[in-house]
Image (cartoon, rainbow, N blue to C red; front, top):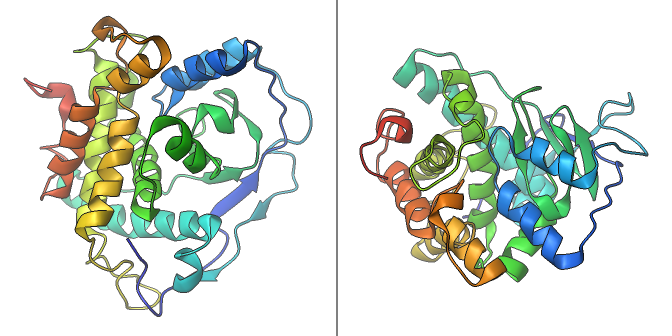
Length: 297
């Protein structure tokens, strides 16, 4: 999925943070356990990670008064540079939800802060590293992401990679912010299981991400008058679905233990995650994305 020729994206939307140090014992197996709980995580994942890693931090913090931001960049740069792509994707999401959310729910969209960190960072939800994946922290309504995670997603979890796969991850996390604004994110408590509210919240975020993707090529940047993105190709859509599949509970559990335990599900199966993304992509609405009240997942 490529950004349209002539596009320009101002700086100051994505803050650069990090510097916290995280010590995780137990080697690769422990990191995979963290990832199972945390990948594209819901409202309580960061607290789990903080407990597993011992919480705490040393070094700089995203709130240390020395904030820097991803600088302005062009569409050509967004198509090649990950931090620029993150910045451009967030602005595309802002433009889409600024209109779609109030139209479909009567709730005014509030832009969430976004922090791009390097290595590790601290948040009100706990301390996390690149190995634990992107997350949304409802305590400060902020999205935290280390773009090097996209290499982990491809290398360790079998995603095919590609720009739309990366953009899906960002759109999913912002989907949690939409859920928070709608008042449904709090339903993802500490429950787990194939029919749990935690799974339902994650699938709804996948669907909301699909809504954005299905409309991104027609969403106009108010600053330039051009659409944010070119139409999605079949190959690019397969990349996004591959990323959704890679972070399915059944896939991650089988990688980690060789077995699948539905009672431990927190995010949904690979098939469910792909299907709910496609529901949003193929003309979905906030109402049709409401997995919390869906009879079948």
